[in-house]
Image (cartoon, rainbow, N blue to C red):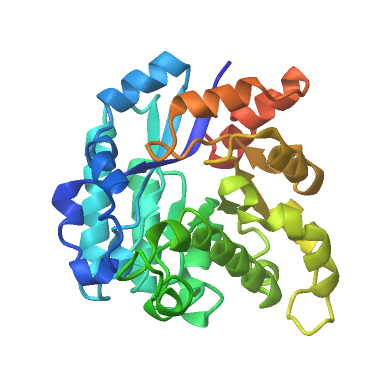
Length: 328
């Protein structure tokens, strides 16, 4: 069976080193993150060997949190361009195994829109990955309109991934703990904070009318829907059209038409059942979150799904192939 995974991460140390350490807020210094540096830098070595060993056909690559969104509007565009050029160079000759989401200089939205178009037209990248808020601003703010407009024009999705929490949030929510001198990374990021912030981000896009303004926009979120499937019924009632927001459609209708989720980092069946009951089989795509999760974990989960073969095929590759135009 063809298997496509589309939240699979990379970080090239020679480029990531350009990010000032204070911009990272201490992120990436844990022992676990340090161990993953070689795996994040690798594409066609151990990564590809693991894909072969586990029967994974294709990975869609994306840059981790040490990115251009942490740089100034003056420095970000060249950084993002350099990253995209190097990704394209390193997957050359392996296009049947790897493609990528463009890395964007989010602090310079007009340049980000241009870089999205360049990466899609020159390198056939399949959209872009945006990581969290940019300079404490959510994507519903007017300055980010050029990115949505360009994504619609190019007919490519935006993958909204969690990013580093703003300092003010980190100081209040995730600091002051007895065993941490600063932000508790596990709590602030991959253990909780990332997912709740991304859920809020998507709900803000709904409430502010962004999905109605850009009805052809396709958004992808990971981690089995970033808590949204469990909250769908309650949020649906609260965010009905006319309840104070700018949204013209219900949450359910909007999400079914424009929001897709991946299974990245979630490897038990109960969350999948809730996702199926809320987002539906056509809006769910398999992903692993490599190397933060292993391909073995992902494949064990995929093989345990008790659905008809044609529905498993939708999750494993059909939905991704269609959304990302991987097989034409």
